[in-house]
Picture 1 (cartoon, rainbow, N blue to C red):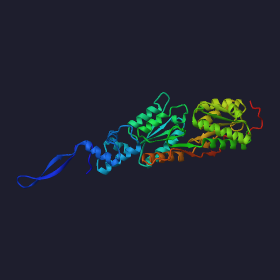
Picture 2 (picture 1 turned 60 degrees about the horizontal axis):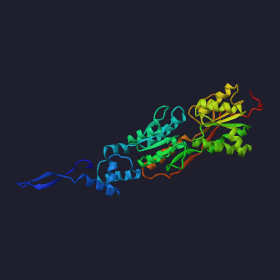
Picture 3 (picture 1 turned 45 degrees about the horizontal axis):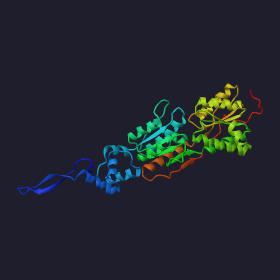
Picture 4 (picture 1 turned 90 degrees about the vertical axis):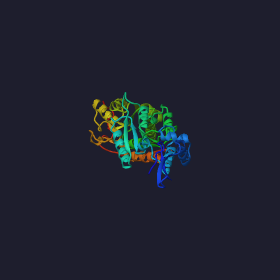
Length: 375
């Protein structure tokens, strides 16, 4: 029979009655503080730490928490209800939004991988005017999640305060960060190779005869944006012998990661006589196609467009979109595997795991137009 450390415990001690027959009488167990001391000694921690774990308080490292729980099991105590709920396997997944179909696709991969391992995913999504990443994190921690996976979160924003992640680690909550990197955060990161993605796109377009290739992407403060620019500039230098300043000033256009943002960026690039536009997301690429059509141009006869992500259904657009396929299945499974190692007390190296993207050629790219004097 298991014993509850926080509840009164009795033992049965036999003694002889006047009649000579054996009878039992309840004898109160040793005080609660003694039981805390036993658990602390078994786990190799202080009694205060044991108390924090049993009461679900923050400020205990994941490995220490697991040691205390293991000590409970060894000594035959039942885990408190709140700790049984935590060990049941709730895992939080925080995404920036769901309008971009790549985020639901990644959430599905992560959710399925967690379910196969006996965990229950809890999806928390930021919306304009809604909860912030910090508020969603607090909500998940209050619900006793075993860990959190952040997708394209503030860790990708070079202007954000990274101390929020160190504070989370201090609460004993394991986490993994997807899409983005910061040397200030000691945690596992999962990313696509954004630089290699731009090399794939530029190489493909140069092979089709394009020499005026533009890049449409989001705000410069984000790590994936900076890496895409680095890869794009290097590829344009290597394959077209263009100067860095010329590429960055005339062929790179920042906007928003939306259809409207892609349309605005592509309009500016087309006005600079670009015959091809590489976009940092498929949504932006759809906006680029709209921009070309508003100029009376056809895709791909007059302007070639390359997306990024290979979102669901993107192969069925008009025309079907040539894009850089983000390795979503591999990234999602790696994020789950890495988080479960953190939860299990055998954390992965605190480094970045980078996955190679793939060029998918469809109908939105073609040979460069011979007549450069387009309307």
